[in-house]
Image 1 (cartoon, rainbow, N blue to C red):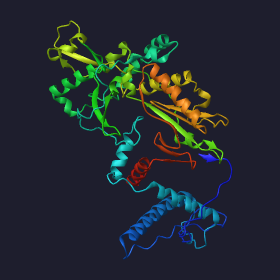
Image 2 (image 1 turned 90 degrees about the vertical axis):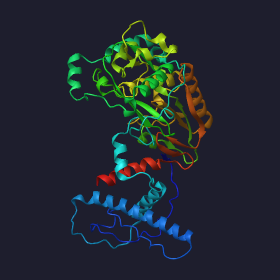
Image 3 (image 1 turned 45 degrees about the horizontal axis):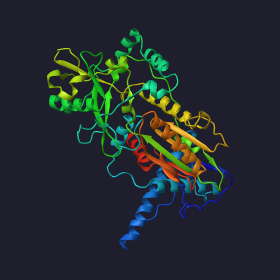
Image 4 (image 1 turned 135 degrees about the horizontal axis):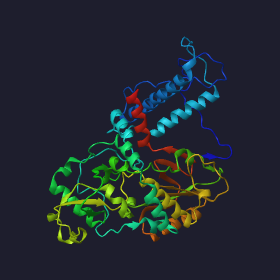
Length: 457
């Protein structure tokens, strides 16, 4: 985020005159930067001052790592025998040193429970729906699993789509399926057996879980299916568990999903404000988004689950199983599953159409690689299940949020975690301060990346 106009610059850190190894260059060059002088280790004295000196020392050491990395990148083609620099830093160099130091101080301490190896593992398995929650499969806990309540009624995609919904749904159901020759080619890289949490190897645990899914409207039943998916759980940022399907074999039956244009940190940082203006932020989140999108019946056979025993079906669910006498009964996922390659595209299109009906058009939508357009009162973003509005008018930002939330609720999508008119907010993993005009990655996300790089290097 940038302000239009000048602003006062704070002085450089008081220890910015130390020397560092580098290349002998003219004084006008910014790189290489001198390293900051590391304060002496905390000696004797009261506990408070010693702790403060220790924290400052740690920040300086972290800043010097960053400066060293910048110098290394710059010096790839330089003379390795260059003499040690000893001149006083220029004003531009002091400003760069100050920026690096303040960035390291703002990042805070690394998470005490995250090792470099674990940080790399989390980045490797990160999906599009996670922010700062710990990632990776966890053991199924029926008390923590996040599911809609009994009696949940998923909404048909044609209803959510609006005008032209039935025609769109028919075209989509045909377009997304791949020709058999493509299916066979894609199956070569698919696992022979999808991954499933070992907790579900117990028939009693599995069947009890399936009955719970059926009561929430998430599965129906059939005597045969085309594919059987794996089932496992990942943690959510609130401590609960999210259900995920290993649909790698199922996705082989479909064409590659079309791309989406989403808001990024770069798009958020492109916001321009006058120095006298304050940025206001509003947002809302569709609750259990994908559990409310009904999967077309013709596609459910590609997302079968492990079979259950017909004789064990509870009396209140017997109306779902038909008249066939076969003992083996396959649950089929009846909602758009997380793990389906087209899931993100589908919900993104539905969300954007709802926003347009509510008055938030494409001309004001923040997205990656889209030039900034000045003069618009409110900018907005639909990021899968999250809606964000930003602008200099608290009233207009609130109106945009309320209009979109109202439209989403009208078509059957519940919205929670609603905020209107905040000046500080966490948006898509980025921390925005509308008073100071700053945007930075959240501390947990930043440290995950930094620690992962340290493990690799």
